Image (tube, rainbow, N blue to C red; front, top):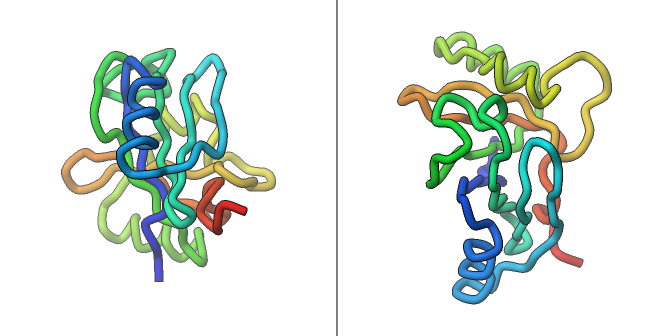
Length: 141
């Protein structure tokens, strides 16, 4: 059964947002991000990965753009990417090709941790689907 393992929050102040979730809810920082696509932090409770992302360009941020703030996407770890992609297609959910291309996600070749394919949900929300999961989703130690 697919499990929610990843939530991403877009923000213009990643340090402030990460501090809030760490101090209020006790989430532990498991990674720091610095790239041309996004800066920020990966936090975890040991089961769910929360990405705090300050997007650096509109291409990877998707249609809301890099300055939008709020819950950006939700990620599901699945047992079979192929089977899940077939169910997504049957539900008329399309891959978010422009974002996937900007991130080099869902491309051919080996899939590695924290690489997911992005799809559009029924209300326009971004959904990540991954077989390999996210850092901090299998315990903190």
